[in-house]
Length: 361
Image (cartoon, rainbow, N blue to C red; front, top):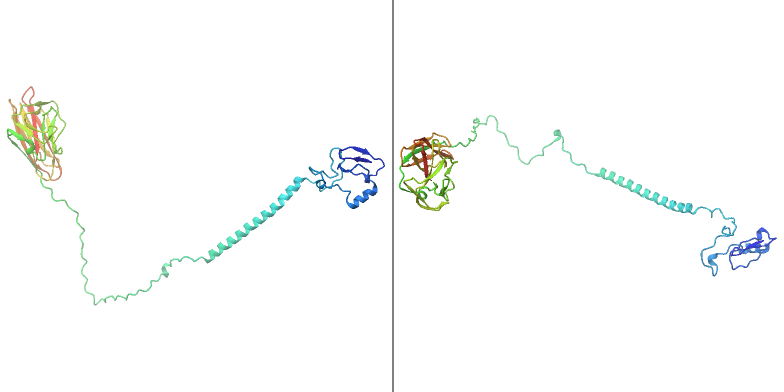
């Protein structure tokens, strides 16, 4: 017979039967052969089983395997097939079974909630109050009114009806008849001293005080007297026998009396002016001169009508001066256009027309 102690040593015990052979791994048991009687007694009392290592006094560490464990120096014993089953299979089975039960419960609850919600919607649809529909045209009935029936007059009691009054459509606003154009030019002599600021209540201008292209005017005249684009040749002169004074001017504020002005040379050269026109009568005074030439003044309203003209001629020296008084009125707002040009020059040098000042009132 072979006895294996806790250290894995072998001891030969010949003559022992297989039933007497037992493995003891505990070092606390002494090595002794097991007899048949002792074996039967231990089978009866339970001593033939492996001791519980966890409950053995003085034993610490992991639980030893069953006697059939085939470790180093041990022989593999007979182990039940249930114990040899894979632990992985057991764990999967333990997980899938509860999960299947929980999933079936959830699906059951969801199906029940769906059935209840569908039933409630069907009940609400059945119990909804239908909207009132408009009656058909043939079924429309007019509720009786509280007023009495107004009796209609009989044909015998009706008086002959008068013909319906004819209404005239409202007439459009017509503009008042347009007044005739009023335009007149007359020539007059120039006084020795002309007060521009006192004469021109609406506007006044003077040419040439500071240079050939300078223009002195009323500071509050709103630029009613305007000159067009100047033509060449253009020169500054001091040949005027009369003097011109002003106050409240710009850029020259005042002057006690000046004889300067501007003039052109050659035929068809001159000056162009414009002033506003309207229903009110206005008067423009234009102070001009002629030097070895004949000048022509032409005036025309932009609103229509015939033009008017006047002339000034001087064949010899010195320069001749005059004032053209232009009185005008237009049927509507417009402008008065004037041109003072050299119609004919009598000098091979610089015969032409001159311009000193203008006032508007």
